[in-house]
Length: 213
Image (cartoon, rainbow, N blue to C red; front, side, top):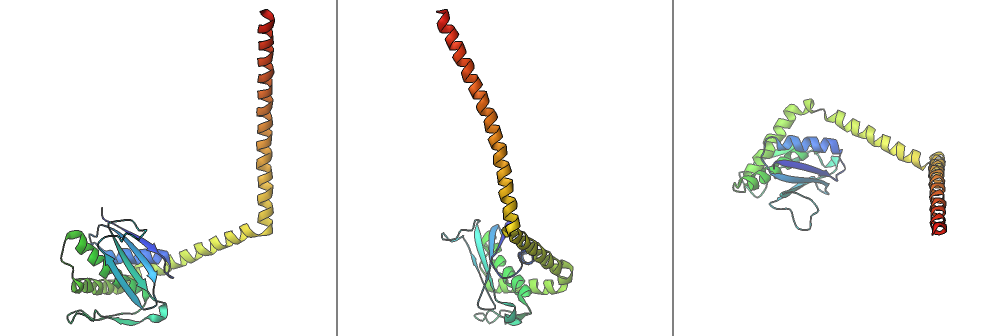
């Protein structure tokens, strides 16, 4: 199985987050991976687990966690300081950070899936390539339209919830419940009369048998 499922609990629009994780993945053969996108106090962070931790509720072969800070955390530089040969680049905004960190962690997922050596340098180069590709193709991804559609849908859901809580809506609900139970009561009366008729027929037949004996 080669499936990447996105669980978004961050402050950012879910539709955009899913689109960017899919973009970051590209053609990587990662196996069955759950990508959990969360908020962070810092600009960004990430981790990929070779196996889903026992305490996690996520399903799949492995788990990647991407943490993103608030929009005011960007732009920021990105470089794996532990390695002298790691490339240095910049995340101009949270979307670039999501693409870069997701590409890095999914590169590790691909290493786990294919049995390749785990390489932070290779993962960093995968992140850099993903960010550069994102900058070149960003305009064609329709991210603003996705975010706007999600905002409109959320506003519609809020309006619907508010309408359901209004006094008028509650009164309509009570009236609908009354009508439903009246229909059930009429049905119950019909059923009750049928049963009473069956009982009378049964008693008449039983009395006729007794008289015949």
